[in-house]
Image (cartoon, rainbow, N blue to C red; front, side):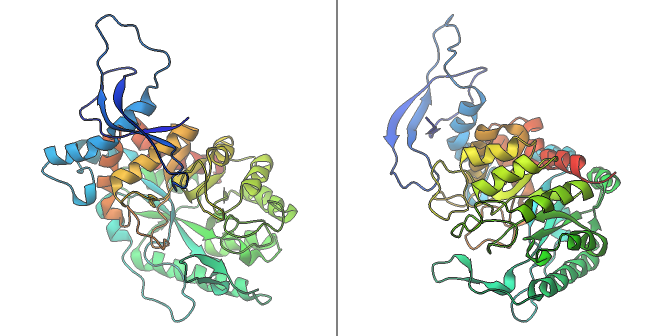
Amino acid sequence: MTVEVLGVAGRPGAGPQRVRGTWQALPADDSAGWRWQLREARWEPAAAGTPPDPWLPGPWLRRRALLAAGPLLCAAAGGCARGEAPPSAAAQALLASAAPMDLHSHAGRVILGRNRPRPTEPLAGPMREGGMRLVALAMVADTPTTMVTPERRIEAYRTPLPGELRAHAEAAFARLAGLVAEQGLAVVTDQAGLRAARQPGAGPAVIVASEGADWLEGEEARLDAAIQAHRLRHLQLVHYRVNELGDIQTAAPVHGGLTEFGAAVVRRCNRLGVVVDVAHGTYWLTQRAAEVTTRPLVLSHTALSARPSLRSRWITPEHARLVAGTGGVIGVWPLTGPEAPTLRAYAASIARMVDAVGIAHVGIGSDMLGLLGTPAYGDYRETPALAAALLAQGFAPDEAALLLGGNYARVLEAVLPG
């Protein structure tokens, strides 16, 4: 059973702790998947000499109990914007040592629109100001065939013409390359580039990513060409269109998961040094990819729910553990469900994922400028405040450093060519 604890003030002592509060059952349709909350909670000191209770959780409870401590921390610091913890000296020190990384981003307005090209936006400046060191900057592969519905959902509405998505991808990669050149961003393609990007004082860098592999159009060899021509190093297999590689979360299944072609692409990515991203894929696609891969997978942007609604992009703990089982990382996005979109709520969402898969398998997946909803983290200049929110959530500095970029760096070290 999973319980969210709200209302605890102050800091817990060392080791497991007891709390007392009001037990509250949540509605069955709670979108975040929580069934129970302990509200108006307060610490209950143990009597002197009382041995530790082996049934009380440790770090999990400490992080949950600090959910409500955020406002108190803000009050002590003179107030915080949008309910966020202040970027303290500890947060700044964390950023200086952590080399933050984002597993999934469209920042700079890199997405090629359906109609006339839109102007790009600053990317290097906000990254530099906020201390964000490396982002997986993603073009979108299926844009010509998708639309936003009146219900604010993205869906495929037509079948592409032969060669259409390949031509779109060439233009989309060109837009990404133009943004990179215009902003003076480094492009990481190998281990040496990764080491350079993580050095103190290094400038902003990107990993070239593709959200969707639709442009392969059934031809594996196009992956090799994209590596050579566009410096591709992070490939998301599917997006909002059921393609030749497999099924998606937001549409009815067609293939029963990952196709044989999809499995072949996973193997080719492993061989060529390309990160395989199973975001948007169904549980069954992820399960098969985990069986096939010889390298860690990533699921770059999602959030955790005990009971995702039909066609939801949220995932269950079991789904997340498939990725973690490969040594991979799940990027948590800053959509916070029924909670207000604050960095405090985002840090709590990250903590829920940590509880499901462990500290070594969670990262930041902002989906910046790619979300239809209001995000808690929509500007890289907010990265210091995000670091502060993670510390306020109860993560130790070394744990927060893993979440901010260390875990994704480990995957890149395992995948990128030497």
